[in-house]
Image 1 (cartoon, one colour):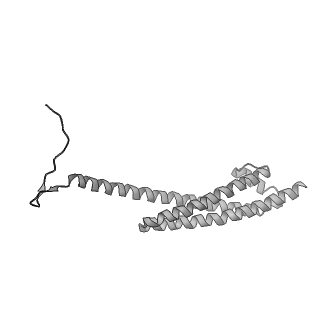
Image 2 (cartoon, helix red, strand yellow):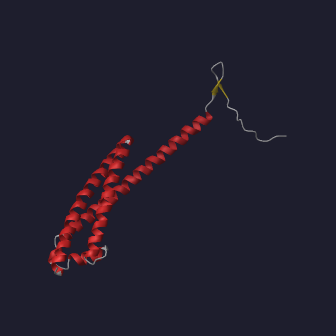
Image 3 (tube, helix red, strand yellow):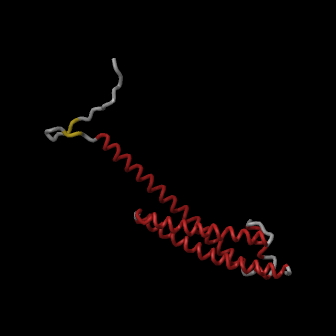
Length: 164
């Protein structure tokens, strides 16, 4: 098989693969956006289901990324941005791949940024929850015991501080 024909076949497979990656990444972005809305609205109950869907999309993206890397290797290219750009500029058979790759990288950056933002929201909410829990635990430790007359009794420690 002539080299140009092989390159055209690899390029066609790579273009189809990156189109599927783009679709899957858009799905993951939808999950990230839904996660952001749930975090902002305080809807913690929906986060587990969103996380599961997001994980499925990421698992699919990992497989597609591995397949893309294998196709690039078959074309004699490493998966580095400069090498990929050089490949896509090396001949007309690769021309359809370049815009797909540019879109894919832009979506990946958007997903990364949104995921980072969601992580910040989650950490802020966890910090707030820990502080609220500390206040409740402190209040529980200071809670009074009520005597038979219904009046609060001072709480005494059951710890021995020493013995004589």
